[in-house]
Length: 550
Image 1: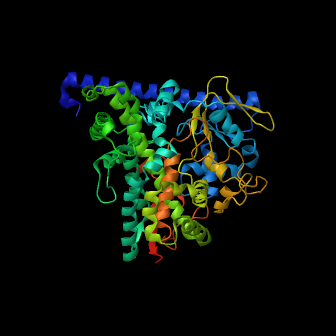
Image 2: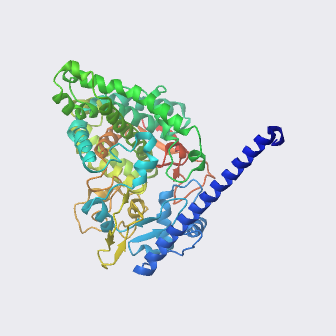
Image 3: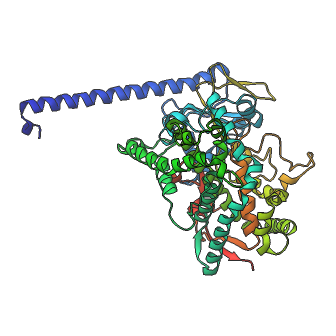
């Protein structure tokens, strides 16, 4: 081959091979230098501060420990990674009992600290809200939103964005949008009826995903996306783009040469889909009758500043870009986590008929026993949804057992420490990714008696001395502090509405094969699905039979 190139060609090829070899050597040197830096970071914490630590290998860090824990507790290959922290707590209770665990998973992940104590979590999320971990904006979400979204922005930019969108996510505004949401829920109910008539096994998460997409389409954009009936270009494109994002080392995605081009194409398509909604809302704001969507209220300040109608057609491109990025994160986070929570609610109610009976009794009391009249009653008075404490308790208990997101990750400044509230021991945090291991805390029997049981009654107790009464700072599925989830009220309204219009008419029975694997007491355990980024989903989409109760 080289001879066919001629003398000059052979020389060029020789230089290319040498160049590639030198680059490989440089890359290898950088790799081992970084490995040395990370390993020494952990050794110094242990030696200089006397911090108890998991058995540590200079070559492999804590990867050996994780492998052993995975084998001992038979963690499935597709089991979601957030539960590793829970199993580390089971395996190393003395270390976890100190409130935190230092974890060296480089090069698979960043050097990190998993925080287990609720008051120590509060120190970096509530008392001092530290910035989000830097790689979220710079790496993971960079191709999706450039890190310029409400999840990843920091400082004054975040404050401005949060204040812009807060009115739209207020309970008052969301209740005003309930009549529009009902239209989508009725489509969902009809799909349930057809599935019940057929007796077929369906993937319940497909149903719950479609309804949550359509509801957020109404709430955010004020349009019918109709994903329950047909494919939607906006959401199909967004899901295709989300498949390219990775939060753990993924060489297939990292080394894919056309990934940047695909991101560019998807961003362009999504912007072309969303920009008309933004422009139309700004230009016709005064003509919008009734309730205002989340985007409409966010644009209110812009509209008030731009009184000239003709000028509103020339919204600065950078402003449109910013709003598009916020909408993208709302559409992603707003449907994905809610869909999973709703699927698990149906699953747990099916497993606990006594709790389902209490839920239905509450709906009978508030909406009357005529199930067919419920939609009209709620449409006429959406505040009826505020009179359903047990329904809210069912949501909260479901999120405790199966949180879609395991906790927040933050960046600590130099010289930053976490202090154990009982012992006073100070733990250095700079150089580590701070992770509030909310999923572990939510299953910790030290704070939640009968931690693995489905007991919604925990959340309607009034006696603080009752053992089941939730301990302060321990319920964190939406996180706490100023950076808590802006969409949590939308989730609450949406779930209550959907259950109010379906729970009395249908029962859900999971249809996993008899020999299907079980983990943590459930065949419907939480899995990692690389097709839908990092949030935890239901194993196999929750195969189920929908049965009519009438």
